[in-house]
Image (tube, rainbow, N blue to C red; front, side):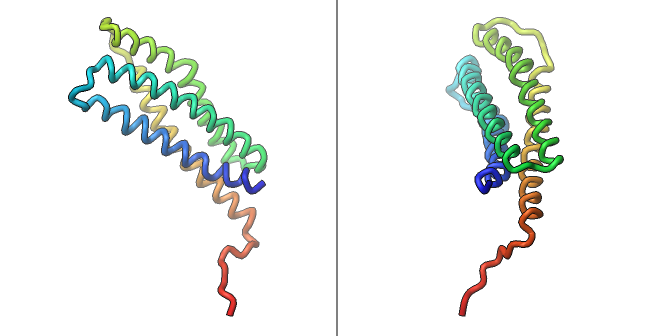
Length: 157
């Protein structure tokens, strides 16, 4: 039970950190490297985002198990469901489209303008709002469930 409580509090923040580090730091910064060609940067990005997506599914499953075992509140379940929907949309609709475009750009093919990258940015932005909200909601639920405990350790004289 304690592991489930810890998981439902910590995992959203770990996930938040991973998404922020990759989507909002690594991705834009690699295109500023002076000796890194655009095709190589795109290929590296493709590999990194594939790995991030797999890690997100692991985090989603672990978080789902933690929420189930901890019998989480409705707010936590609703936030989890929203994150799940975003990840499903990204994985099964958006990433295949973006991967196809990336491969075409790596192969020096002309690709038409598209809003898919902006959709990805919006979904990632929503995700980085939902994840800390989920962690905070889990922490509040944990505190409410343990409000009778004395969390302050007093010194014995």
